[in-house]
Amino acid sequence: MEIQNQSRTDPAAVRVMIQQYIEKTGKKQSAVAKQIGISPATFSLFLNNRYSGNNEDVTESVLQFLKIETKRDSLSKKPDIFTGLKNTKEILSKVYIAQITGDILLIYGDAGCGKT
Image (cartoon, rainbow, N blue to C red; front, side, top):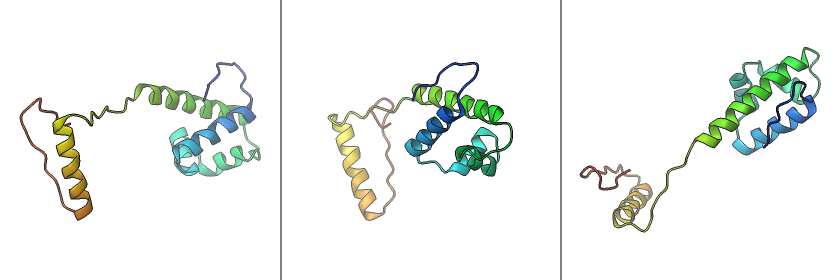
């Protein structure tokens, strides 16, 4: 999703971008509205192009939210799991067994042995 820097942004384009964001993340509209800082009702009306208030303000708020979320997503790094390592294989097998049996698993060891 590409966020453009424009002084006047097309509300229709922002609607498409935020709807893509909602579909991609699986978040509920009401949760996204709260994160943006507007009421869920206002957000729903905006998305359906029926908001009679100041669409420019809502558009800018949504666009600012999308910029922040895009930046946050680009900065967050998923951990690399090296499944070929001996410790990783052992830990994953124990985790799998604990998951199937509904048990709690405690993993401990010396610092630097690859527990995380």
